[in-house]
Length: 165
Image 1 (tube, rainbow, N blue to C red):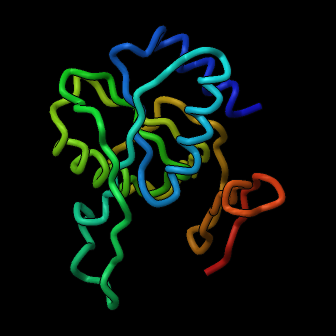
Image 2: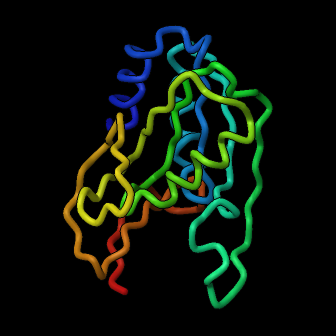
């Protein structure tokens, strides 16, 4: 139901998607963006879609004990002059989104950038970023991680879990 509602909002705001591109953020946003693209296709909307890995644009890239492993970036379209919808599963501090926006600029200068997230943790923002489209807002503790599990990853069903650090 949440995915269908988000897709209806996208359709309402982007009409035929001729000047829109959807970008899934690695690593977890790609599963969600695939679901959004599939749902839009069911309603007859063909959309441009890509994947950006923000790893090398993170502000903490060089301070980890172990090297961060980059995932793939798959951008077949320029974002120059396009309306971009960045898609991620969970919005918490905003740092991944900031890094994703920086990585996105390697592919042109978009006309606009919106953010679509499945889960917005609301509290804990470190960067002034707000989602345009939100599936669900949740309250969580600072010592918790929120993780979205997808059927496409081998789960029996899609679900959200809270993990204590």
